[in-house]
Length: 469
Image (tube, rainbow, N blue to C red; front, top):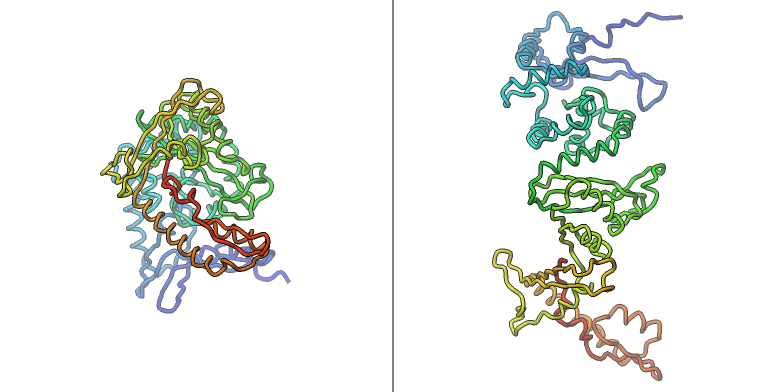
């Protein structure tokens, strides 16, 4: 039995849906159930609310829908549609952004929008977060740079802006972008599902990326100071070459990539970005970063690096290219430790040969160091390295207090074990656990003896301090 044929207008008929005390205008389309393959389901799609006297109040879905979508809806004849008509007429008085994806239409839209006051621009297109990010992109010249890099594809420009907005405005990954677009008005006019995003990202060449970065750097001041930072990102996939190796910084047992970004210290605006394989450490990636920055015209910008980049080879590479840099170094690293040993303290604990900055409330000293031939691998002969030492007395006092507390606690615990026989294995474990004191073991009786405190642990320069090369 064939049954009664389906009415093609059923999915577009608007009904009154009452839930508790709320009255909604809704359609109930019949569609495949994503959770049950091969099954169909009814789903409520709400277009607004309905008052007791049958006045239809449209919601954002109805107002932001295309004219084709609204024309398909079949409302009951007894409903009052004046409110919806009034709001639509108000919106149509402004320049509308096309949603048909036609390049000529969008070009005409952009030409028309230039004649509209700034406060009225995109009033009917964006609101909330997308509106704010769009205005920031316009003010910072990002939209103009995208037009210059992709002059023949307005669709790509809008798609890239949408993908840039998505992580900021949503807590989901890119698999949910298309769903997010259903209820958020964004620059892109097509559904950005995973396959579209993949094809889009693959179509962006390295020349496109470098061209965009050059334009972003050109907008920076000549005296801009930039900082370089890196982090690892875990991935659940196993098919990309870059994520097959490496360990996450949070010790997660997942393959990952290394993401490097260079940004302006003043505006925090990124000017360089690159992704490396997960097995690349900071010292190995710096040569690529320096070469890219030199190609992008950043040779005269002062670059700040954090710890991990302070190897002799890395500093020599930047010195050979005459690139000004600041890098954080380890206090136990030569020649930093040698200059730390020169710092003397008075009876009050203040350093004698360091200057105090009242603005930053730190002590500082600068030393000029010229490496001897062969002392630093690859370092240009005759080039000087300036070593800046910074001491925060508040942190130092806290560390000294913590050190003294640990010594007293360790001493009290060792007093219960002193003079008692211990095995060789137990003695080796105690030497690792109680490192502030020198411990000895009588080979004949097996008794453990606690001697003096290790002097190398209590000298002034052993207290952790912040140092920069």
